[in-house]
Image (cartoon, rainbow, N blue to C red; front, side):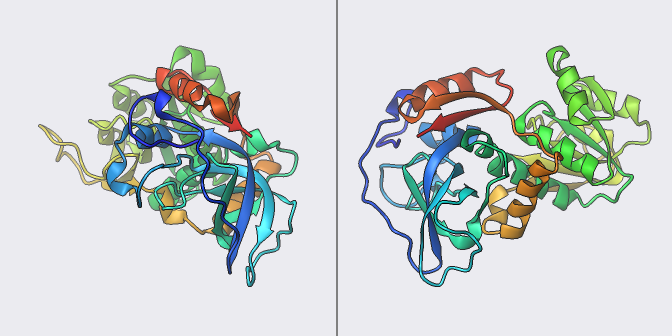
Amino acid sequence: MALQRFGGPDVLRVHELPDRHAGPGEIRVRVRAAAVSPADTLIRAGAAAPLLQGPPPYVPGLDAAGVVDEIGPGSRTGLAVGDPVVALVNPTRPAGGAYAEHVVLPAAYVVRAPRGAGHAEASALPLNALTARRALDLLDLAPGSVLAVTGAAGGVGGFAVQLAKAGGLTVVADAGPADEKLVAALGADTVVRRGHDVAERFRDAFPRGVDGLLDAAVMGGTLEAAVRDGGGVAVVRGPAGPPSGPGSERHAVTHHSVYVHDYDGRHDVLDRLARQVEEGVLTLRVARTYPMERAADAHRALEAGGVRGRLVLEL
């Protein structure tokens, strides 16, 4: 599925594009499932136009799951043709993203899928889990530290809660009434009501302030008020920087912008996340699947909001 022009979901169309084969150091994956993300809708709508390389048609999709189809000469990999795999794809590159029958990637981008996971489930892993992992690595909190998470019922936030607990952190997270049990089941030690004033509730739970905060809900604003002096804030899909306005200079907090493609080609990181699925550390959540030709319907559902778990396109 691709788009010749930017716009609403209906611009997504089936396109016949030239076939690519695995070159030196590359692996070709026969895609069986591609999860839909907010980044895909931004590409489709044109908000990411300055990042797109080459002329249209543009192929969205960052999460690919499927099987190894070809291995190029000189590729350093333990994989074999037919192995089930997952990969993070960068759809801004000229070759496009994961909404395709095949993707060709450097061998380091492709790892064995978690054992026991179907293709749709496996496609829920790369983007969100790598984003959560990158955020936690930037915050670099020691075991025993306190992490606050906004958007904990979502894909990035949910993985962050689980990874933080596996790393020995205490987690306070936000949730709406319908999601409180879900967030607690993911491992949050304390769950507070979500909302624009959630920083106050984080502070009520931890009066000295949390050591780090992951803003997976992209709330911005005054969230740093929940963080102790010398702590850190990691922002997903947003610029790193303190809020402006009265009181914004109240205390020193380090701000980090989380960019998932900083972990492009980090085979070790993605492979470890896949193994953590097998160990029960991470939970793969799929809300609904669609045939690839109904990509427009999946985009509409995502943009309508309220989805818990990933929407996945299947081939």
